Image (cartoon, rainbow, N blue to C red; front, side, top):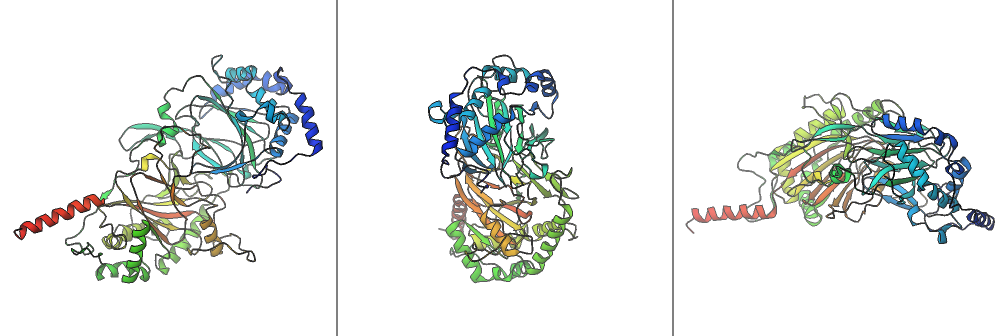
Length: 607
């Protein structure tokens, strides 16, 4: 949670002292309905209108501007103090963001809030006055009267670890987006919280069409300095931006708002929300799996569970912990999977393999880590066969793209070897059939990925929905022992630290506070667009924490989406994984095939 001396309380509005109440009452009497902008806005902002207009017109990657030292400093300082003193905050988190929300200016009334928030109300009058909106229209090159007086503004607090991932802000009639920063005066780049602006690149969809999507790396960043106002034109599929994770101890307090037009924007079908709700497979097609005949792990004709052959056991025993290859273990795993449709298998690979991976992972992280502000910060680790994957409004991570060459020096090479020799092997397909009762997979696809802390994620979207059920098999490798742990008792102390503190790392991954977990949610059937800060989380079906040397098996229905939550900078390590998907036959298809086999047998026996 954020520091209590920097933020309003999360439980109730803080009571003001008699002295403060008296000052506010006096200020309330001075509220102006008629004013000139220079009463509140600094003279240089108004005098430099033409310069602001020219800069806005030439700005890249899309039309945006920055008004520095916008308000009289005492005026905005008073706004900040009123917000901190007299409001409540609500914590909100989804695949897209992590934030504390406070005052919604549209809901403030003179009768109820004039005493506690007089300066905030006056700021609202200024921001949505005819004279100010007219100035914004001229700077942004809009026709007079384009911006309506609709109030749409709220106070957001990004405390340590808070962030907002890439999107274009297109909802309804939004025309101009703005952010007024209420941070401390001496904010620095190492504290994060920058506004990231993303350029567009061309991308070919699975259907072969070309579309414009945001790059995986921002092309411009703006730091949140006090009394600055960043603003940009809201355009579908163009105005991609994000809020970098706050890394320091001080909160990033800001007023986020929009000016609306009377009509919806053109090409709204290109907006982020519409793209995320476009059904279609964004991924590589499945590779059909060919099996020798007969298949040893197929279910017996009497309906009893399949058994793993001794040949397949010998092959897998070179890689898997021997515990998982016993008949008793296979039986127990199958029963749990049949009950829950998911199971996590800890300490999956043998010690010699996991020790090798841990050493390579730690070395790779040390060699590729870059501090915030470094020119290679966003591309750290993207070298050799590790490729940066976007687009940023759907995902960002590194993928190892290389054929197995027998060399097992780096993390990517080792994981790629295990992907090929274990997860794509016939013995493993039979192992899956034995522990899930889903039958032999008919197709497969997979990736070797790295989610870097402070940078990477995937977002839930309709492009990952499948037409039939699939079995997700995700093998994760992170700092820690991979053991399931409980929070320490009151008399214990255990602070998350580096790789040497395995228990602390396990606890942090398990808590989910640093992200990196995989979450399964039901696809929203509503066509209505939701505010990016007001998406509901009540569709969550399952959350799987990152855990070292742990295989997660999840049976995913066609209406289910999944995402890997943004991995925060406080995470003990990057998240490396082998993410496999296996096509399995639906129950109806299996029953139909079984009936066909029975019919053939009946004909052969003259029935």
